[in-house]
Image 1 (spheres, rainbow, N blue to C red):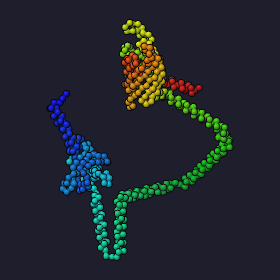
Image 2 (image 1 turned 30 degrees about the vertical axis):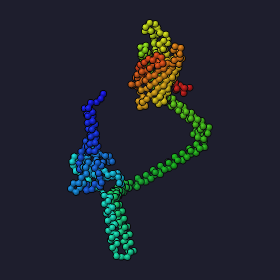
Image 3 (image 1 turned 90 degrees about the vertical axis):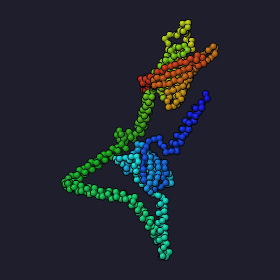
Image 4 (image 1 turned 120 degrees about the vertical axis):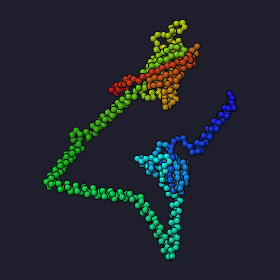
Length: 470
């Protein structure tokens, strides 16, 4: 259908408005989030540019909205995200990402107990140190010093000595100044700590004097006698221990024979080894019991061709998370179904369905894939499953084939099923199965209920313990 002229013009205007709005947002100073602005005064902004980031603790909280000259001072207007509060004693400095990196504004928020700044308030910033000024001042000082030395009228050796003296003196004074500036606080702390230690040492000495004065000569004598008696008893105990050790070494007594008899030592060692082996086996079997998971499994199937509802009932056993056994009775019927037209009782295999058949499968999981095989509805068969969503394995596609010896019009034609299942809960799932895809081509809907039973797992694990007892 062709578009009318009005529709084309409308679409063109809409696209133009969208492009214009995008350009205004990108080029203009517009923001989609809320915030507020305030001003910071500097004597020198040291190369800070508009739209430079504003950070605190390394995290960007806004940007520089405008830089202008007001009363011979640089006035920086900054925009801060709404909800972040700046306080009157905040400090603002100009920093860079490296020695010659991009300039940005660093703000230390200030004391939270104060009233925060409002939109439009002014803050005094900390002027950055200009690298160019430092270089110029240093060169000027060297030039003045060189001129002074140059104007000296003495001999050349004296002039060279003066140069070295000035140079060395300047270096020493700079180091002393740095040391005193950076370490003055530490020096004050050391002096305070030493003074406090001196006071505490004096208190300890006074207490020791008082303690010594309170002990009488008789108490001191009694203490020394008790110490002497305790020393004698300790010596006797050590002598007895030495005698016992000597007897054990000579093989005397039960403990001595146990230590020195090699045969007995080997027997004890063998006994301990046997106990350790039995303990490991018991631990393995107990772990196996706790790892068993068994489920009662019920399927209610409805076939779209013969419109009959059939039931399967079985038990699924998982001795390991990736291994399972499945035993079931399929197509449970108390009597043979009858033909809906003639009313005659159907034979065992009519309609390609076997009633009261049996299934005994063994399967293994490899990640999202499952392979199983064995007896499927009283006939040998194999099947495969696939769970396409690794993070949610409730959806599964599967296919299976069995009854390879089935004759249809004189031709062998195996039974093939293909379908999908989805597990809504841990115990309820629904299946849609394209049953007998090569012949009957029926759609089969199944409701599956699977309930875990810990008692069965317990009794199955006891079989392993009984083998240990034998």
